[in-house]
Structure formats: C-alpha cells, structure tokens
Amino acid sequence: MMKQAIVMRTDLKMGKGKIAAQACHASLNAYKKADRYDKRKWEHEGQKKVVLKVGSEKELLKLFHEIKNTTSLPCTLITDAGHTQIEPSTRTCIGIGPASDKEIDAMTGHLKLL
Amino acid sequence: MMKQAIVMRTDLKMGKGKIAAQACHASLNAYKKADRYDKRKWEHEGQKKVVLKVGSEKELLKLFHEIKNTTSLPCTLITDAGHTQIEPSTRTCIGIGPASDKEIDAMTGHLKLL
Image 1 (cartoon, chains in turn orange, blue):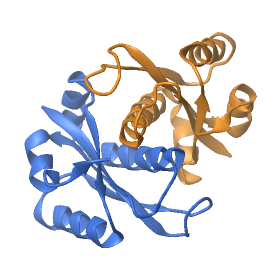
Image 2 (cartoon, one colour):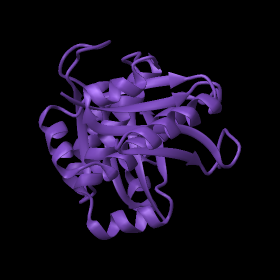
Image 3 (tube, chains in turn purple, yellow):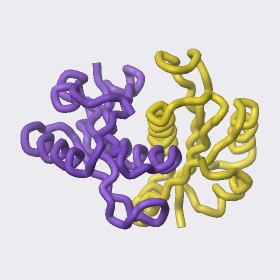
Image 4 (tube, chains in turn cyan, purple):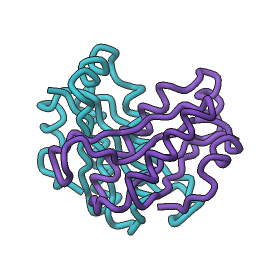
C-alpha cells in the first residue's frame, strides 16, 4: 500500500483553515516530486493520506533533514509567507510521499495523528 | 491573481487532521483538472489557497452543481471512504481552481473563511 503523510506543527496554534491550507501546500508539492509510477499506484489505491503532528520547529526540521539525508522519499518543507495568523517565513509542515507505507512509517511511525 | 479555494463542511464535526486530509484530496484533484497555463500562473504567484466553509451537505452540493452548470472552473467534489470519524460515502468538501480570483469569488464570495 502507498500513502502520503503530512507532518504539521501544533505549537503555532494555527486555526483549522490555516492548517488545511498548509497541508494542501505540502500535499501538492510532495506529489509533484514523487515518482510517476508511485503516483499512479497511490491514485489507484485511493490516495491514502495521513496527517501527523510534531510539537516544535526543531522536531519538524530534524525529521525533514533525516528524511532528506537517509532516504530517497519525495519530501517538501513548507514555509509560510505569513500574510495571516503567523510570522513570515515560518516553517509549518512537511509533505512526504506518495510512497510505500513501509518507507514512510520507517520515518514517521513514532508520530501521532493530528 | 490566481487562487484555489477549498469549501469544507463544518456540520460533520471532523477533527483538524481529518479536515486537513480532506482538503488535500480536494486541492490535488482540482489541481489536476485545471488548465496547464492556469496552474503555471498560480504556481508563479505563490499558490494562494483559501479554505472556506458551508454548514451542510445541501449547501455544498448546491454550490458544486452551480459551479458545474454555470462555469468552466475546474471543480471536484470529495466523497470520503469513511474509514475514520465519519460515515462511508460522505461528501466532505469541494476544491475549485486554480483559476482567477475574480471567477472564484463570483461563486464563493459569500462564504466565510474556515
């Protein structure tokens, strides 16, 4: 099975709409980086998505760099322009995949659902 | 200016993570339906996204059919498989665009931000 994971910071106290918009940025940008075969497989399986949480920027960046340095997973870090609710250039979330459940779980299995 | 709008039901009492995942489905599916030129323009402008709300399925479907019947906007209705939190085959949200602010506002200008 394939999935896409979004990892969202909870310490920014963003509202529901803001969280959803940031997740959409991450989802679309990670999708564009994914392998064509993986995208098709994920689409045929119903486009499973999970939204996970971290409690700080430090934790978010640590995960992002671990994924970048140790895997070939498509992964994107979202920086908000900060027009609304939060400071400019705030890192809000990362998008990972679509890729296999197994590969994504190896990096995110310790995180809880948002 | 270009934007993409997500219109989300609030009456389903979905959690933040569920809302974010549904919004991602809508964002990606509407993006895939959009005109190539509109996508590029939107990407160059920073991929503006807004998340709006409606209070019922009736209101969601009315808007979806109005858009389908009276415009050529890329628009997608998301039906949740219902594995978690909500009943199977629940319509949760719609994704509209990327398209021009003006065209999207003509259909959604009366809605409030989520």
